[in-house]
Structures are given as C-alpha cells and as structure tokens.
Length: 272
Image 1 (cartoon, rainbow, N blue to C red):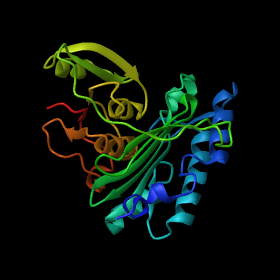
Image 2 (image 1 turned 45 degrees about the vertical axis):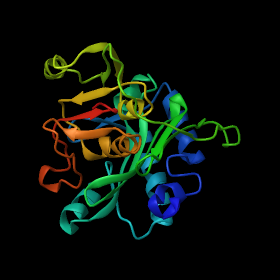
Image 3 (image 1 turned 180 degrees about the vertical axis):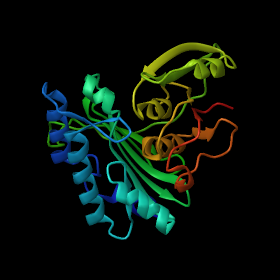
Image 4 (image 1 turned 90 degrees about the horizontal axis):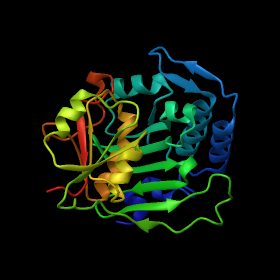
C-alpha cells in the first residue's frame, strides 16, 4: 500500500492545515489586538479565525476527497449527518483547537484534522501555527514533525523528521496536563504514578508532545469533544503511544449516542 493510499491526508499537495491562505489569515487574526470574540450556545468562545479556517479546510477536503464526508466543530449539520447516516469513514475537523489559548495569545492553539475509519483515527494532522510545528501520523511507525512557518511560502521549511514516543526514565514520568482544565481528579489519578516533572499545554499539543518524546502521560478528567482529540490521537498512536479510556478500553469515535463528546481518557507514551 502506498503512502497516499494509507493516508489520504498525506496525498494532498500542501496538506490541509498547511494552506498558505489559512495560515496567513489565522496568524494575522492571532496578532490582531481587536479580535472579535463571540459565544456559542454552550457559552464557549468562537472567533472569525475559527470560521475562516473551517471554510478553507472544508473546501480543500471536499475538493481532494469528494467521497469522504467531513464532520467539523463549526457546522452542526455535519454532526446530524453523522448521526443519521452512521458513517464508517469520515474526516473530523477542529479548525482552531484551543480558542481560549488563541484569544489569550499564548501560542498553544492548533488546527486538527483526522481521518476516522471504523471508529478509529487512522491518520491525523495537528498544526500549531504560532509555534511553527506540524505533526502528522498515518499508521504504526509513521509519525512525523515538520517546521512550518505560517508567514512563508513554504520554501524555507524543514524536512519532516520521524518522531516516536519514549519510554519513561526510571526516576519518574513527565506528565503534561491542560493549562486551563487541570482539576483534583487529575491530581488524584497522578498519585498512582511516580512523577518527576509537570508540564502544562493547551489544545491537542499535549498528544503531540508525548508523540515527540517530550512527555510521558496526559490524563484527562474533563469534557472534550471528538474533534479535540482525534488528530492528536492518530499522531500519538503512529508514534507508538496510546489513548484509552481510564479503564484501558479503546477510545472510539463516531459516538453519536454521546453527542460526540468523549469519556475521560489517558494518553500515554511508550509506557509498559
């Protein structure tokens, strides 16, 4: 099987999420001191950058893969279609994961695109424009990081390098947790482990830092949606890590019976 057959995202020229139009617009919005912020029905924030990135990504995916439907955070009609049709293969898109980080301008927001097949994320792209880091994965042993500068035309970018989850050091784990959602349940869970260092990060960067061997464990006891986790899940799995529910059962996707939200989960590196 060729790379393009095993990972449709890999076959798109420039890959979705790497579009210069989207990157420059999102970066410009990030730097805008007068960024307009609205609230959704659930009181979560949304900006024009969320909507613009969504429009670009969806258009590119529909052009490149007309036979693969997409489910995106910003379009409720796509959620309903998933529920009605019970899709076995679909894209999951979060055009701007970590909107609070985006608004606070700490750089820890990402663009997430995943391909889900039979309830598993089999390919994913996570791009952090402000940090110039793009992660992508599409099957066991095929996880990569690439430097992507949002303001450039791509000519100065570095080549993709392979990444892999690490085995933790004997003196303890490096734990990464949400910058804005850490709670007492997370701290209680971590009491089960020998921890030597805590890191904080926003958005799906947490999965990717484990995939890159920069951390070992990410437990999540707060609410997340499928588009928040699928792309990072795919990258981490490709790097040799795992994402499971707290009881060790698989974290699945297409959970229309839950409204596409996730149960609590834990992401691990190469922890035996």
